[in-house]
Image 1 (cartoon, helix red, strand yellow):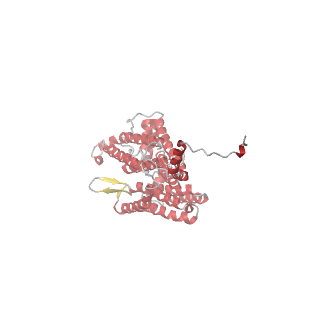
Image 2 (cartoon, rainbow, N blue to C red):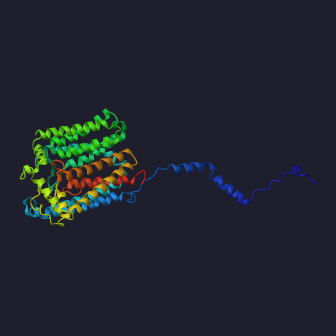
Length: 419
């Protein structure tokens, strides 16, 4: 028997199935598979226009604030509107304009929430800043003067007027966020902070001294420098600047060097020293808050709104809320503002880029600072100044702009880096 190692090797032909497999592999070479996998792996992610990823907690809190605002604007204004020639004795005049602004605000919210903010909104940052500055300058020369301040521009032919300073707040937040996101060092160097301070100062100077609207100028300063503070690694310059500004303002007010604002400062210290003039509004506001008690007098049952509180449906509306809905209703409003600010901060922390983070921070500062200042004025915690309560006070421009800004927040929340 021949040994196994000496036997000739017999090559068996490949079966037909094997040949078919080889042909298919020849048609699609193996070397192409890694390229296909690479294309699939590095394909850019496309964000679809969807409401699924939005921050619904923020949206619900805003909707509730707007609904409360509509109810309270009507409750606080119907008596004065029905008895005043300024509203042509139309008790539905103020609420009608507020509802129209709310509808337009929802349209703006939906529009702003449904596109990629970092690709599209950011392109209009510089344009928005320039347009806002031009509108502020037009307000200085052509604005309607009310109570010593020029805040509104009338659009002839349609009977509509708007307040450019409200637009300027969001435009400034976009502008500062854009430039810091483009060059992070601007927030960490004194030169960079000085350059940003010039752009902030332009708006603050036009609003504060050109239109004599110091309350909006303060909000602009808080928003602009607040964004820089969040982005900067330095703390001491902001502490020194803030302390110096407060000290200088206090000295000017205390020495009577600020005209009618010195009178407001004196009325804040002792409103009962001039109860029929400088201290009248704050005294009536405190009466309304004290009358509400725990559960309030009931919706529509306020007594102080019957001609005692001047412009009860505007900046001082929180006192009517406290009188009619009591401590419980006032606390609910504060709770909703707290939810809104919390969600806005969370959106900023989870934003996919620095621009979204800083822009969300700016919007949070706009709403938070206005709510804080307004409630502090109504409760006589700080001197009287004309800052509306966000989403609640009567004012179409403020409501429209803030609801549109909320749409920007919802937009940023759709592109969060994490849940």
